[in-house]
Image (cartoon, rainbow, N blue to C red):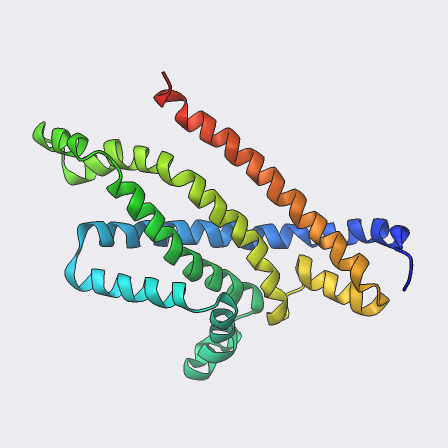
Length: 224
């Protein structure tokens, strides 16, 4: 056994923080793309468009039913064997693709549930006064669905930030990848992984605080 090397841990913090922007960039890019795709999937599911609905259900079933790590390996190692032009894909792009497709499957169901959860009497009233389907979604349904879905979507974003730690398996030197290299060179594995765990913890707590503030703001109009 050896004593905890606090000096090493303190010196490691600024090194690892230098890789934090890449971690956050991958998570933000993945979240933005996943949100767009999830909204499209949710609308298809709500409208029950025949052929598209079947494809959406298959997509959601596959990406919810298989591990994210397997999907990352499929994108990075598997697809280039089938499609030659994907040979040039790098680990960062593959990670963003994996995060986008994996989390959009979960988010689509949350958004669909939020849309369905809007009181049907409001949609009937909007249609009765001549609103189009587009106006109905934009003015009535989506604002309320956003309030309902926001807590869940924020939780998915937090999960996405933690999921970026899998990027090091594709050779990406992000927060977890940098920690792995530092630990391997110093052999102080406990200290290195404890530092990165605390960094992830602080990020998650900061986002959880932001989520609570956002929920209060969105619910303010519904409080008596």
